[in-house]
Length: 338
Image 1 (cartoon, rainbow, N blue to C red):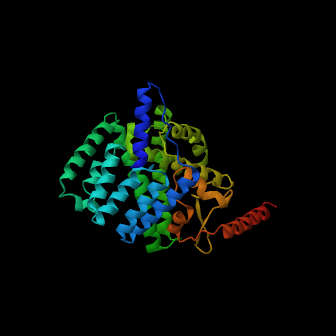
Image 2: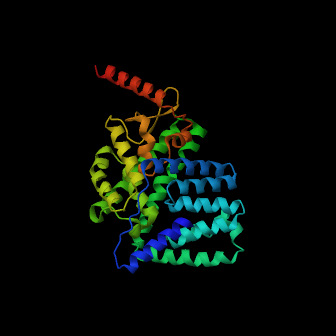
Image 3: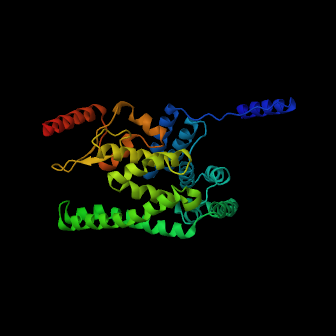
């Protein structure tokens, strides 16, 4: 409270003197971003373990690490943890913050999210929904709705079949005819979807969420991410410009940069590309540039620490082991070239 009061007095004093002063909002440092990513991932892990109070408290630590600067998704998740911990007031604080300041507009999700059921009987709930609904109407005012519908179908094609990969593999085996047939179907869908996406990009550029929504915007990236190398390289400059204009996510661009580097036989930058040993079936992180500082680079583009990311493939991140593995792969590559 003291800091807020002092700032207010300074602003009043400056106004009385008719001086124009620009308030500079500092971006979090790389260290702050890395700490934020670490803490919010700890919070998510606690949520998954159903330790909701500790999860909510850990989210608060994360927000303090960047002096209150955070993204809407993490604030929403914090609200869910507070609600599940039956700390209703704290949950509403987070939700009203993203509704009023962050223009949260996912009306369909918030009205069906069972994590927030404890809030429904509170008089503040319907008022909150009114704000979110208004945000939704404003956000979608300039939507190209026919294009949004097309992109939604493409998204379902791209992601739906990929979600089934694990089930098909577990049922029939990694090298089974069924698995090969499934990958063939994915490749065919990818080819059709790529034609559609290239037409959109060539005619209209990399559209932002204000025109095609969050899912539509993600669909542009996903289809290019799954396209041939020459196509990825063609649209990489366009996506870089889109990130500068806030029409694409820096985290998505990082994944595309890594995918291109790996396909060209170069080391990746952010550690997003996971490979699989064909003999053992075990996963590993494709060779990295400067692996000691990978988490700093990941934090700068909004990616979680590598330790948390690779755990999805049952990989334990160890810098020294990674360096040894990378040296071994490089040695084998050189032998094969001789």
